[in-house]
Every structure is written in structure tokens, then in C-alpha cells.
Image (tube, rainbow, N blue to C red; front, top):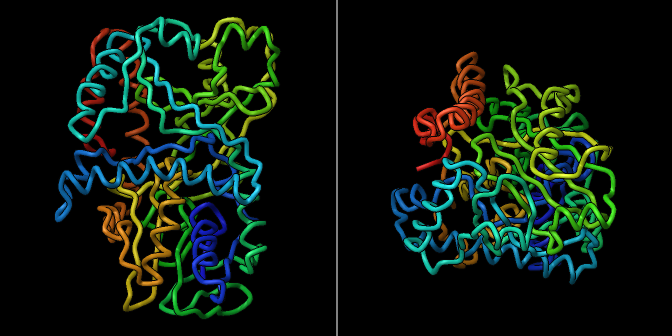
Length: 427
């Protein structure tokens, strides 16, 4: 039994059904398949992991080789998603164009160069530094001093992927019960408003909505990320912007932003900045915040010349899941039959696929390379009780905003960011 019909739950159902068609697999979903972050994200199918490789290597029992193995597994997962969507006929606009991260200030340029310099320590180099003229071959943004490029990312339509997965697993014999809210998990059972469902293995795949489960208020914090999208742009505008190869794009500011050129010719652009709500509350009214939407629209028009008069036709948002130590994890307690995966901090499009394959091997007791990766079995500490949780998370969001302002004023790397970085998965 799987709780949650997002990427994690559906990929787990998919690989279990493919591995053993005789299994009885049921997915319980409070809303509809893909209602959460899986259907609302920025469409980056990337090899990103919320915890730095250095911190992964420092985990007890892990080490450098294990950290590199997880890094390589995530890179391979980007390709795996493309192979499965093609094989299953899931039309989600998958296009592997890599990622360009722009450096637009001297402080951002220093971070870009440092990241490229450090990359070979963790295996063969596949992160490149791009000079401004090389950047312009991929994306023509303003104030560019340089950029980094990695090939390990694909752009896709998140909603089409998750709905396509739901259709696929149902064809494989998996039963999805939508509008079936689970309120409590226990070994061998899940309590719903309709009654108790029993199974040998219960997989918690609820990510940002985990706090709604009894006893899990402090397991994962729901933090909101918001997005905007333009109308389809004409050919002349795309000639000015570039992005012909559809790389996903961002820059080295501290308050995260992310964008892509969609398959239907829009700019879809998102970022953090919306507040965390006291008590890990989640509500439809939190999905939109006019101040953040306005800031995202300004950021897009600041990145690209010639967007005056372009209409922004869509704006939306939703919660993602953040573990206390910014360390995504996957695991199975064999004694209780309770399994879990999540804490992706917004990097879950590909990571959820890796989680689904790993959970499949754990459940079927297959001794694969995946079950020995350093995120398997990790248990993050609980978040602090309120109001400390509210104060800490929102202070961190404010600190990243302040760090970007500090760098614009001082032209040097932020002291604030250096102090906060260890608390949010950095070095």
C-alpha cells in the first residue's frame, strides 16, 4: 500500500508492478493524482540533491565513493525518466538540454568558478564554466559575467508526467483511490475516513503533506514555492532570448529561482520567497501570494531584454517538503513494514524516480547497488516545536533575501549566506 499519488508513490507503484505483476498494489490519495508538488513544480528533471556531496560523504558509514555513487545514480536517473516516458508513451515534453546557471554579479561569478574548481574532487568533471560568449550560445540574458553548465537535466511538463504515470500504473493493474484521505499510519495499516486499509508494507510518499498525518507534524516542513508563466512567445522574442536547446536555467543568487522554456513556447519561472505558515499549515489560500508573483515577474523581465508588453498568463504555487537537516531519504523498516521517501526540498522530479526504484528493491529484498546508496535508511531529526519552527524557517528565507541585497551593495560574497549555509544543506 502506498500513501500519496505523486511522483514517489507512482514511480514506486510502477517499478513494483513491472517487477512482479502478481503483487496487489493500492495507492491512496487525498485529492487527485499529482495534486501536490508533482503536478505543480518547475519541470526540472535534474541530478540535484538537497545535501551537498561533501556532507553526503561525511555521513557515518558513507565516504567519498558512496557520495559519488549517489551523484552518478541521480545522473543516470535523468536518463531513466526519459526512457520510461518514451517507452510508456507519456507525452510530457521531456527534453534533455542540461542546465545553465548564470553568474550576474562578481559574487555570483566567484561562486560559479569555485563550484567548477571543486567539482573534480567528486569524480570526472561534467560541470563546465562558460564565458559570456559561450553563455550567449545557449541563453541571452542580461548582465552575464559567466555561467556553469551541466548536461544532467531535462525540462518537462510536470503535470503531464504525473498524470501519465497514473494512467500507466493503472494499466499495469495498480489501483488508485483518489479522494481518500489517510489520517494515520501504523504497521500494516492506514486509517482513512472510510475505514482501515491493511497491507504487509505501507509506503509513506506524502512529501509536503506529511504534516497532516497523525504523529508527523514535525517530520517534514511544508515550504511554499511559487511560479509564473508567460503567454507563448513569438519567434522574434525567442531569437532575442535564445534557449533554442531548452536548457533549464537559474542564476547564483541565494534565494532560489528556476526557469525553463516550455514545449509550447512559454517561459515558466519560479522561486522561493513565500512564507512558511505556523504549525505546518497547508491551505489553498497559501498557493498564491501577490508580492511573490510580482517579484517573479520582475525577475524574468530583469533577466531578459525585450519582454515589455509580454503577458504573464499563469501563476500558481504549492508546498514542497523540507527535512530538518535538508537530507532527502528513503528507507524501509522491515520489522514494522513501514517505508518512506521524501524530503527532496524541491529537487524531487528525478529523485522520486530513484526513490521508487530503491523502494522496489528494498520491498522485494533485492540486494542491488541502489539499496546501498548513502541516503538509504537515513532518518532526519524532527523539526523544532512551534513557534521555533516558524521563526527559524522564515528567518532563513529572510536571510537569503538579505544575502542577495548585501551582495548587490558590497559587491562581495555575503557574510549572511556563509553563516546560514550549513543550516540548509550547504558545506
